Length: 384
Image (cartoon, rainbow, N blue to C red):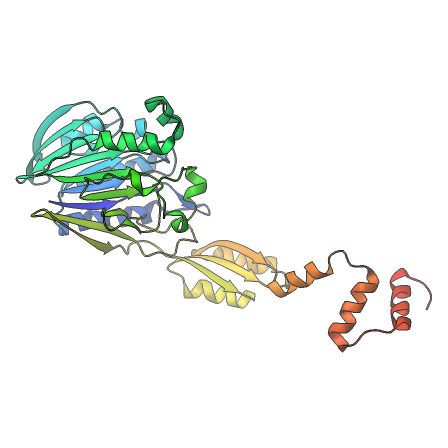
């Protein structure tokens, strides 16, 4: 039994106003190729399929086309993240199951159905936060949990202790694990150890940090979503964040991947498969207009944020030239640190003290009282 683990597609997300749907289509096609080439049985998408609760129609069209294509090669199993409307995401599950596509949500009713899905006879049993997939004589027991907001958790569990409430939901989701099956848990969570890997997710999701102890010990593999940078949560528990399949913000410099998980003879092996079909996000630190233009030319196949560090203001002509480049995304102008420090040191000083600082810097000596007096008269407009 083989699975491919991915998450955080964020379909419809823009970068400084730039539409990246075509780029997202290419990277999802690459994931589909991985599923085909690796003869995967199941693709797990661990949440944040879309970037907003109400995604643009083009993003939804891309998603449905993507999972339909992937269903030719394996069974797509999709859960909701904190950016998804879980009800909206799973609204088409009745139609989707005809193609062997599993749009999983809380309150999934118990049912069993069979079909020739992804080139194999497949039997699927669903229950609340659980699905069992049997194909080719092998069985995947998949317990799952979409993003558990504290409000939703209070409604469902009536428990004020967030960590304890999540742990109870996870135990319930994994209660269908068997000794002879491939037991996998998939969830969209924010776990201890992921803080340093965040690239905006904490602010966007408002997620509460959970201890690793909430993870199920009975899972042979745990497929996590929410953190955009690839991350190993626990080698012992085989718990991983796959990360997003493309860079979504300029502070994310990680290489992108999906994770292949192979379960054979009771042994689990994992392998990172790199993705390449996205434009890299590059930060170019420059000190002149010419350097900025050169950086845009150099990284023409990327998206570029220009960090202009100079005390010389940029001309409107230069800014206009930057914006003409298709790869230009953002401009951040800052004063050099030495000038910032000098400005801080000058703050609150009298004219006499400022003159003294200037004279020491230029002449490496203390100005005498007469020279200082002449300076102060000049500043005040008095006759010298």
